[in-house]
Length: 338
Image (cartoon, rainbow, N blue to C red; front, top):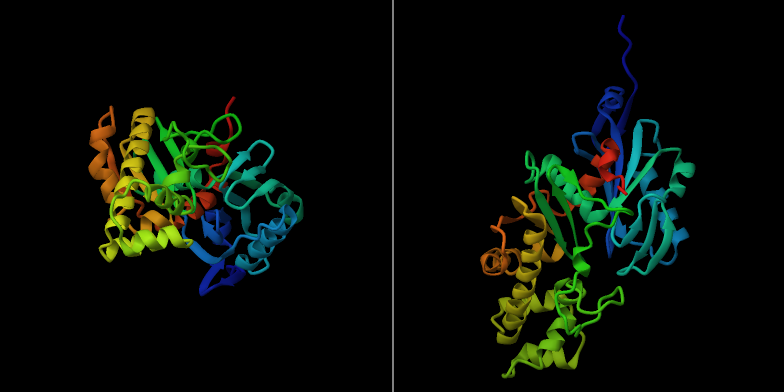
């Protein structure tokens, strides 16, 4: 008689011990605003997930939040889990497993490897957008391609690159900080990291309102939205809403933003020579006609190398999360190289 393997029930899925052969992992995406956690398999199928705002009061509070969310998506049972993959925004030290500095949350020196002792599972750390690039290469738009770039335009701007089939990592895990390349030599706007003239300071979700305020000095006519920008605090979504209403100043802001983005993308094309650039992040994915399409239209004007296709990621906002899951099964892809 063949023994019936024990099962665990996960959000409507019955997972028996064959999952152990297929492999299960927890993936975590720590962005500038939200944290997303999911239990998935080696095919990057998500079985259970949960999202909530990042608890950035301290490193200790973040680690408690991570542990709680991991236990939740595993229904309290980590016995079938091979490991935990964490994609995090900010400057990292992958060798030590530390989030050195996350500008959009102000988290500093958080050693996520501490979760290994608490949960008795290996932890892999990589940048959230590098995780997205890993997912694109394995299961997304870049499947079968050796050269691709992923750009996330959300609260901040980040990216990841695959060149000649290898995910670029760097000596500490930061060979991809696209959002902090300088696109304005005058340094008119300050980035959340403290630097000036960085791409992220101009066209990210956190930067666009400041860019709009700066551009009020160059716009010669009065519009309802221009008055609003001058008199009160706005958010990025307000700019897109005003542009869709036909406000001339809001449309001008997005035109200037498209030029900045296209120049930054041209830098990436000339550095990495990708076959495709996949674009994610909340700002871009919610407004593809006003963010992604204008970049694709302008790119040939600015790039030296042959422009690649520029497309919205088919993995949507799950790209970093799926990459974090896959990193557990491909740890060598995430290791820093001297």
